[in-house]
Image 1 (cartoon, rainbow, N blue to C red):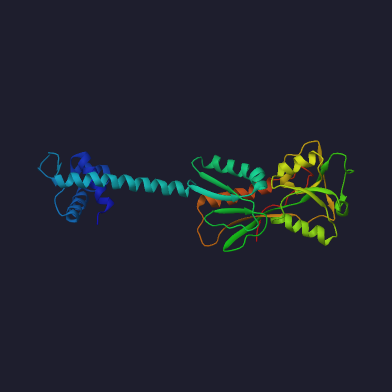
Image 2: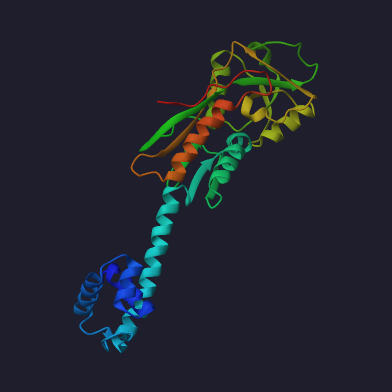
Length: 303
């Protein structure tokens, strides 16, 4: 079994020409260099140097040339591995994150920018899916608007309050009764994820809006409200790009906010890059405030 220390010593002697100069280069005694070369020769079954004696430089034997050529490849790979490990520990590498529209549009740009500013070599990959049955699979991190089932650890990122969105002037400033939505034309998201819960709340309150259009595109919902097709009830993260044609109103009674969670596999060790992404997510969530109504979103907290 070849020892990398012996190969390093072989390389030093071949480069310096004598055991003494190799010892100086490596910080060894000359006898230690001789012992390591002898151990290498026992390992490969033959002499790796011709030793003319005196001040003359040693010369590689044909066997020594073969061992050195392949040994330098091994030393280069070992150095590359050591460098990769150090960069990995410092936060380089790859992180795969599952996301959905609101997180993609509002939280992730800041999170990814800060992650890349700290670790320019980071390989950040995002996978977006709108589903009510999230699976973490091979992802490192997964954002979802609700708790994630299965063998995961998770933390609540923030609570995202709902607001009524309407064309300016359609409602007086201030809160709007939930009952005002009964029979009202409404543009809504597909009845999956937290939208399904919201519609159950309507039904339990005896409120039956007239859903005239559904789309998973937040901007599509706002565009149709802007066009006068109907009102909408959206979480605040979906209202990041409101203009002066639209107004937001709290509902009375208020809908319980949707909860955005961040999950990661419970049975896998996180990379330093993924751990840093979780830390940055907490910072971004803490800073994030609603631009629509001034309601501060609740920050990330472990559960």
